[in-house]
Length: 315
Image 1 (tube, rainbow, N blue to C red):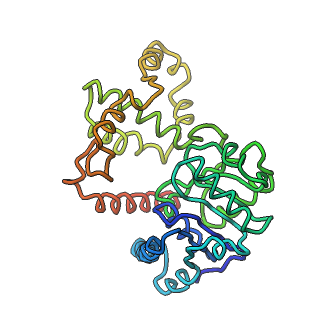
Image 2: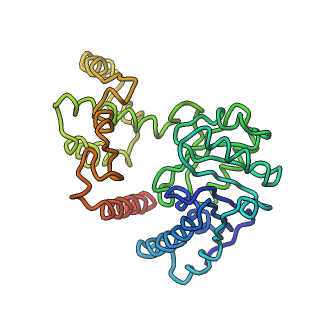
Image 3: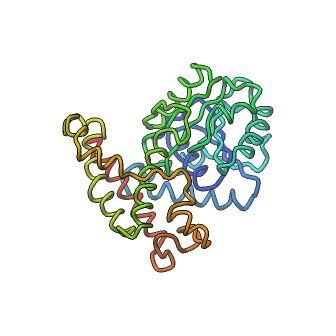
């Protein structure tokens, strides 16, 4: 049975991230309102959220009899007034555009209760910059959910310069009640997760552009090599295991000196593909040909692998 929580949450934005966040809240027992400007987006979201529950059941993450109870915790709104009336928590999940986020959250702040916690799931925009548009910036704190947000445990909690400690604690507690693993991160570009993700891509994209390696080889090294070891130990643990003397050797210095230091993605193969109109899975072509590869099958496989990894970690 799902234990109903006391706080009412509102998610602004019914795209992929908004739906995944809303589901993670509802499946944890929180009454959750999902807002979108277009009714069609809400209709699609309703179907998507039902699909998420079926996936949970197939993976042993939820019990089939609880489906209606979870779905009943979700409501769908195309007016912000109804979505925000009396809510306790607001989580914005729209496009990565600072002005759009500031405008939407400033409007939301006027419509929700004065003591409501306000958050954004941005992956790179600074919390301090977003909260500068609010009249109650102390109530704001970033919650960077990592896609797929309904499956990934880690959520980055990023307070801005004017965020109250109570707000950070409140957000952390909410996430813990959803079964997440919140990690407080510094308010720097990319925080921690996206930052390391960009570092890896920058290095591999540089090597690929030089013709030294294929995209497939890099992905294989990550999936079957480096990532396979990560559940057992992180980079600092590995550094201690290998020995810091080794990481100060001539060999290590040669590697560090040879690493890519491009400061603009446009100078890499990422920029070259983008200039040709290739945006990846969405356009059907990126580093891979997604007209030949099945994008939906790829995402389903990704989700199953993540779930299996989480199950192994918990055992």
